[in-house]
Length: 462
Image (cartoon, rainbow, N blue to C red; front, side, top):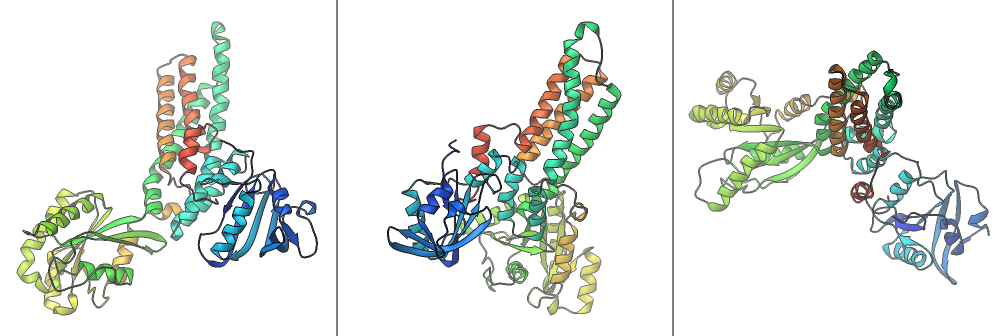
């Protein structure tokens, strides 16, 4: 990794806009920018204090490229910990490229994906989990994912891990010290206090691991499969949930032949609705493939919505109940919502019959928008929000989850070893392994491959 040169990139989204921000970082960032910037008051960038802004022009020889605002951030008091220049120019793609190309020809290198945040990590401005939270914050598209990313970026998760690691390291040092006095058979580490620490660590790590189930849902959205026979109103329900004509609605059975997906936010949580092909016996090869995909989508979903046609319920009652039973048997761990759609077309006696035949059925008219808010409330009730309200740490990153699982396994081995009275040198091996996995989360233990994989997923300019 080359981290001692000066990099440049567009920090705002590409394309035309009112303004664009071009960011430079490196030991020569201020010098390079100063050479091509002319303040309207004749001030040089090199003479200015950190965190100041100057108005002026970017010039190439005598040609004015644009009137800009230049912000100066001197290291180590900057995002990257290096000297940083941010040029706010007009948002023309032509102007953006003219300025970037000028600096690329004169001492700058194009930044790689996530390189500004990588430098912030390497210079101690962020630990690794905080750096990853930056990417999560940029990608957040609902209140819950935004809240979790903010908490992690502020260091909540890092602090919890660091506190545990520091306590474990203290005992590890005492265990290692015992190895130097093995012949004297002395114990520097209080075994009772150490065992109490291991129990507490195990409880904390288990809680963090368990939170990943919620965290993964928050980060990626909750997949909800909408299933049922053709023409029962699945596409109409999807459209009314999304408040747009996302799926084709037709009286012709079998219109939806492939899964249609889209996501909305309900109560701050992302729900990814999947309108699937209608389940029925068919000789149509294409429709048959769509039905097969329906079952694949059900298997991957966290929630299944099964629609029945309220208007046909009296004649199809036995078949509907049989299909509901099949889904419950095949996917016993997946919450199932049964919705009787088209209730605007039936009388009260049929409504009563449906409610008595199917416990907890939701009565809906997707066409008229009846019962939609009740459905949203029921979906939201499935999400465990207590953890969020209490501001507890939630794990959303699969890399963190994997490291926590391995750290817990090592801690469990230490506890088992203590119960069996194994020697200090063997205990020390598992303690070091636990510390190693905890260190991987915050970046205390890293490799170029690990950093490359993490920062490759960032956008360029961040």
